[in-house]
Length: 284
Ligand code: SF4
Image (cartoon, rainbow, N blue to C red; front, side, top):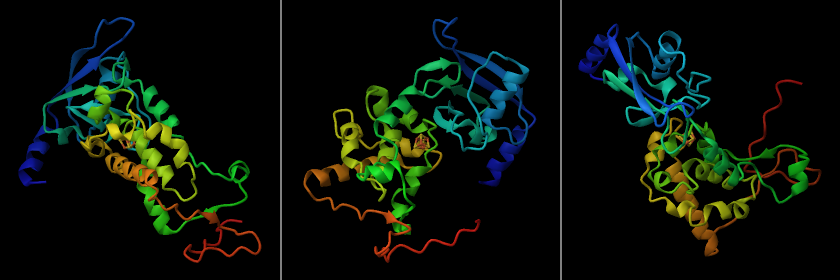
């Protein structure tokens, strides 16, 4: 940050900041409208702090969602000055504007004020079966131990498992805005997360949600989802990898991944040499 920017931001503390917040109560209002609030900007205030300040001091009818206030739960994502952001992670001073416009996430219906209805996000997520699917159903239902993976096998999906279901990627997606049936970046990234997991054998059973008219082929790779993601999940990359995986399967080019094996092998079965030995348990 340049010293000029730092100085400009310093000067804003103790001055008035204007919040224009989209208000909508479906029981009272015919359509959403903006209401303006003003308050003094204190050092360290995030957009969520600003919204909470307004609720506590100026307008107790304002509705919004929040929980952890530390960028983990994903519930406070809002559309702030034209970008889908976690409001708890967005410093007001860093927006470099005296007017902060706050709306609920686009591409979702509004329940009330800043609260989006995320039903479609979770329905699409459920459709791709976001859990380990195994062909040995007995092991899935009654696990007999832990499955071992190499660090490289873990690397293939760990980034995609950081998703906190905030919905920012879906709000940023231009395809969702014109096709609400599109599987969407969040669900697609989670499909990829499980498909490349060596413990999983569910690619085929997820294809119905991915390789279809409103599936991954609708993505034209604008990349807005990855830009918006506060956790670095990179859903746009996951979608391109899914497309590659689907084509490879279609033309018989896909080699099945080495299946994960139980960390504690049944007697007589040799453990895979490429899997490091698990450390001894630290508690009895
Ligand atoms: S992929 Fe990123 S932006 Fe999308 S829901 Fe998950 S954490 Fe949020």
